[in-house]
Image (spheres, helix red, strand yellow):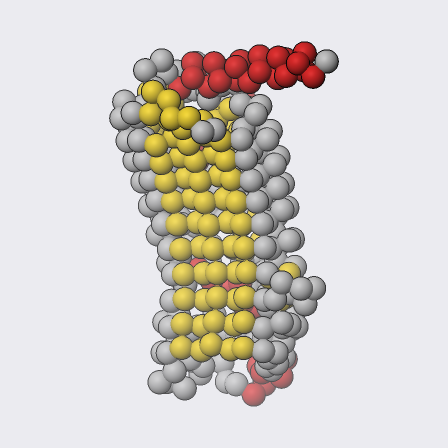
Length: 319
């Protein structure tokens, strides 16, 4: 087993149950000391059918758990949550009954510290019907190694980034078809996203704002949110989106070059505070590319008013 660096498993796989494996394999043995890539693509893995130790995969870099698109979706083994912190690339697709990805030690009944060094760089989650949290709210880990998050079709997810964790090196966020998500993150989280370069939020039918301002922060007129490196922002098909940021915040986009807003019919303004985007040359709304000479808020307000007038004219024309 020392020479195994890659495992790609197809079909239905049964391994030892935890009680049986714990008796057969001594705890001091490292099962796969050289394993770097592990792909599991199967129709059904029973919850208790996979037994692992935290140190069984000391060099594991890439983990993909991919189930089928039918009713036989994968049940992610409960015992495996503890190894995720040390893996660089993680993909879960069509995984049934996964409520939280990163849990604290108390919840998973394991004796590992919440301050464990986190190595996760890329996280991809697709079609996880029961997922409510990516990160446990009580986690105290720093996910500063995380660079890219891609979330798709996680209908029970209400928000993405918790305020208890830092994401200083996060460069890209992509969220698509998360129909239960109401906002992306709090303003306190936005202040720590100093390296974020691209953000794409699409087809989230319940999204009312991107950045949610806490009540205590709404009272402060000097509240400032700075996106130092954000170059691209896409907001597409968000039927309930009313603004980018609730509250009277000063938004600063020092590097924003492309602002693409389409199919957001309830968006009356971008922000209720001032906006600074010195490098933004034009913004795209529906099929038009508009100059930002008059400011982002003014363009969105004019576009919304034009749509209202157009709707009224169409109403009278029909009669």
